[in-house]
Image (cartoon, rainbow, N blue to C red; front, side, top):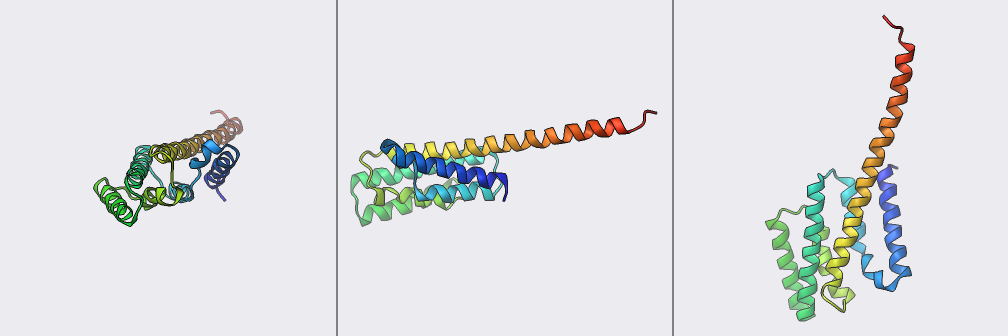
Length: 160
């Protein structure tokens, strides 16, 4: 098991614990967060691509929330699906969980339209920060292991 997988699992555990412990933070945890976590850890993305996906997910959740607040019914559900698919195609978001995030309001029934987009953006931004910190940690640990080995090798090589 690699370090990024463990970091993602710990991040999901933290978000779950926060959402269970503090009622105001309940919207931070949603099932699609796990799908985004796996997507982010299973593929190699540039930081700008990760941020585009976070923004895309935030926009999709705003679309879903706004349509849900207008009228919670099958037609707005359909319009939400269609609009989100158009956004995914137009901006070339290669992340199916974005569509799923747009549908969350239809089963979570948020009180205000802005709660879900804010929660999605915050939790996915935290996920990106966690992955970035993990990458930086891995980089420094690898370099720390290389430097002592290189220094020991220099000491063993006779001077010419």
